[in-house]
Amino acid sequence: MAKIAAESRELFNAKSKPFRDLVQKSLDKEKSILNLMKSDNSGIAYKKLLLTEEMIYITTLYLTINNLSVEILGPKNTDALNEGRKTLYKAIIYLEEIVTNLIDAPFSEYEDNLKEIQNIPLSKRYLVVRKLGLAIDLILEGFGDNTKWKWSFTELKGRFATVAKNFLDLKVAMQDHFNPRSADYDTTVLYVRLIKRLLNESADGYRERYELSTRRIDDMRLAIQYLLALRRIHLLLNEKDEAEDIKKKAIVWKEKMEADQKKGTSK
Image 1 (tube, rainbow, N blue to C red):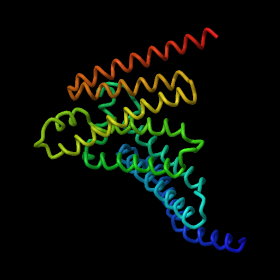
Image 2 (image 1 turned 180 degrees about the vertical axis):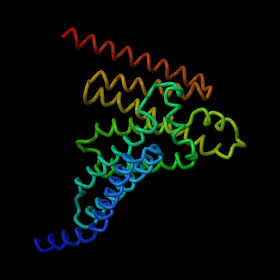
Image 3 (image 1 turned 90 degrees about the vertical axis):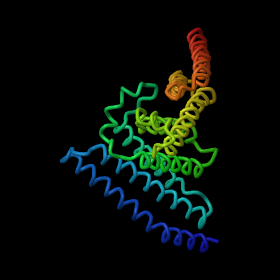
Image 4 (image 1 turned 120 degrees about the vertical axis):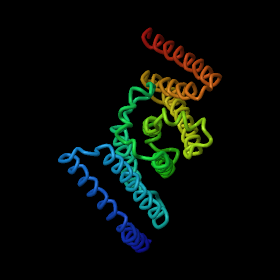
């Protein structure tokens, strides 16, 4: 058995090495771009988007290494999955540096940031968001339901929902969303639908983390912020009934949060 185990480990190391080499190559590329940004501040936002895509690519490499571990050795490779998780955070941070991490905020507060990437077509933005979302889902799936990082993913997915929303030029999107003749009509509808789902899931995620894990008031505040961000989208789409339902839900959540705060201070 020991011989079989050693042979399996050797096979895994041999098959995973090309992917580890590619990871290192991409990390070297990241370092090179960051150094370039220090000496040349032109097109910084575009370079950070390039870094975002590079981080997504690195994550797929770590996922491949984990898949090889499962296939050859049996157990998942938690080191590779954890490196993938950390790399996803880097991808999101690069996007946050481009489009901000504002959750419940009017478009005017981060509109100027989008001017820095105005030449990036909607199809490209939607593709990046979908690739990043898929990478998050696959890493989470790789860890499994009982992972110690379960509640950490609430934050990761919440921050992803925020940058996905802020990556979209809402002024342009609200025109294209109501114009079936627009070349970007279908993509805009799909993108907006995705944003609504992500914001709703993030609100529920933070509420669940509050109830089942942390009992931290800031988690409940974030849950409410995601609800209100979703309400803004409904209002822009003139979906008044949905916006009103979200408003009522946010009020109920806020009342619960305040009641819990009173209970905590009265102990």
